[in-house]
Amino acid sequence: VGDADGGGSDHPMLATFRRRPQGLRAIVVADLVAAFFISFVSSVEGDTIYLYLKTKLKVGTGTYIAYYMFHGSMMSVSLLLLLPLLRRFPGLHDTSLGVVGGVSRCVSLLILGSFSTPSLVYLVAVLGGFAKYLVVAERSIMSSLLKRDEQGRVFTVV
Image (cartoon, rainbow, N blue to C red):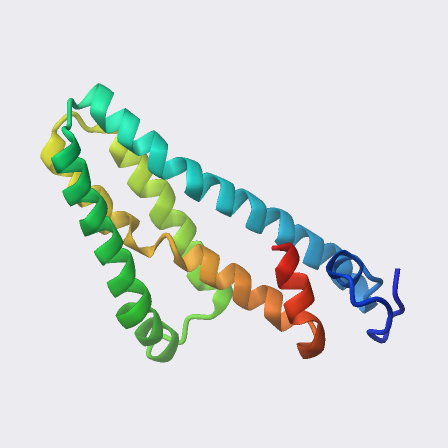
């Protein structure tokens, strides 16, 4: 499907799965699979957390809305302010930032599942604020593996 030097079809699927040197096709496909699972978990997480908080902790809709807004604010601050600082001063690379994001999501969900006080839900928002780093790192790694002229076609598949 396509040749090793980037030729071939303009179709996104063909551009995604074309032959690549040094096993890069397997890495690109693995990154796409990771992107699928990250997106799937993220979309299900919001609905599940609402139902979980409503059922287990008897949290009302107003409290959930406040939590959701606080959580979104924490992720925004984390992405817009802290991410550039973490890339510059400690010099964290994409893989390290992806690990920070994955650990942030796991720790926040573990704590969410283990507490019994509704007020601690805001701690989950603080700890989970770095979870989007996983998505940022995945996209950055993917773009570094692709030629500039094929990035748009491959990201269409993502």
